[in-house]
Image 1 (cartoon, rainbow, N blue to C red):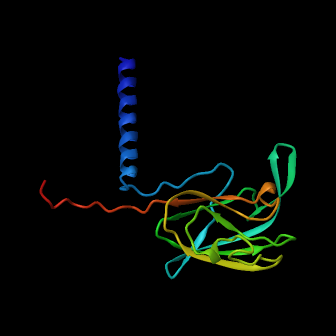
Image 2 (spheres, rainbow, N blue to C red; image 1 turned 180 degrees about the horizontal axis):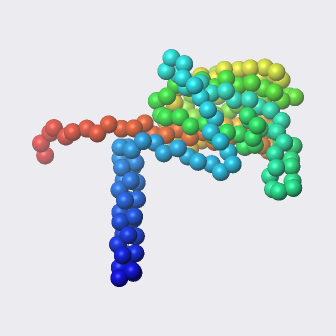
Length: 180
């Protein structure tokens, strides 16, 4: 009797999970935030419909394993930096402050955006000098898993990168009015 109950409970849980996945795959469910262990999300505010994030490049002391603290460079107090989460179709503004002892910039890896927002020094943007600020602003035209990082020698290797998750825009269900 106990095995039978356990079997039906497992079957129900499997069915519920499959239904939830199907709903998300059809775009009917709300986006599920990505959770990254030990790395928080970058908070944002909204200004006239634009999601505004504040990203700070800075030296970071971080315990990687118990008893081992490393001097790294990261964003907003962590290396890797906080995860940016937004939704396809959002317009975002990222106010970037450089608190490092050298110049840097941010490249939004894999994003479709104007060249002057791409963050590759010498191509579309000047470097952000120590103590400087640059405001990135662009619409999000795609969805998926991306990341951000500088395009300066060794900065990425000492912790300067972070996740950028763009959730698929929730689709509205259309009714078929045609005849087969």
